Image 1 (cartoon, rainbow, N blue to C red):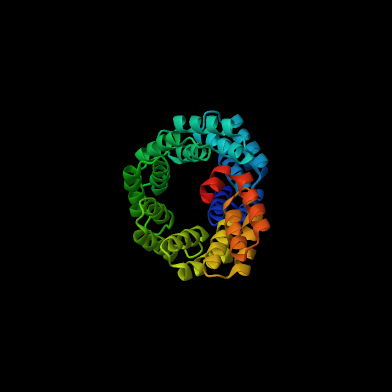
Image 2: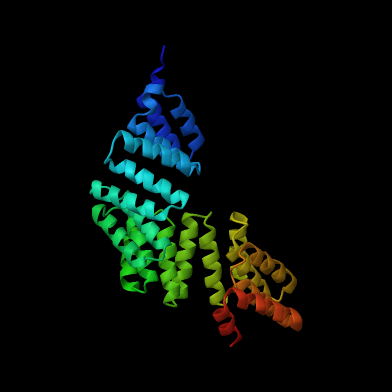
Length: 319
């Protein structure tokens, strides 16, 4: 006899819960237990697409979303899933078109607009991103993510006053999230209020001690404030969380250089240069290390590497 926990609605609900808890393989296993007749049901297909996307399988996510649209055209949720699958596969124009269609079909939901804002921001179209995030916030004023996205983009556009208002709203709506505080601290840094930035970064770390980004940014701000010994543990904490984070190794290398620990500084800066081959900063910092050692040939070689990556930055640094 069929167990009450094996009914299709319960299996679908259990799969959705497993996915929300980060257990995508478990969610997939639950969906696999559904009877054949329920495999093509709309809710199952939408869940299949979400699970496949969580597992990094854009192809399977796209197939499930397409099947849901074949069975039920003009369903906003299906267009949204297909758009997200296209995004994962790098099909940006297709993703944008599907997400726009989803936002048009469902005037109450904000999730497609958030995805559109994210796409526009990644493409550097900040004005478009602000429009999408703002519309999402109008549909759901309690959505902290919409205010956060709008605030970050407004800050990048130089509209600091509006950015701060949006980010403060996001922080109010999501008092346990670190991201709004980090973004507000970034604004403080841009306005040279280092003391306020340090307080906000520290508060963000209290909310999310695993945030490597917050540790790096706090380290950078402490360096600007001249508190080098305090910056070093922040960079090391970031590296402990994300050893592949080039900015953390670069910051630690610069801090060790400032303390005269040239051998350790060189090792960290070389790691940063290897982890992010496009960044000129580790090479500029290596040039300083070699200059202090009196190694003129290595200085020139490091500066040449920096110029290859960012000629303007290297020129400004030399000046």
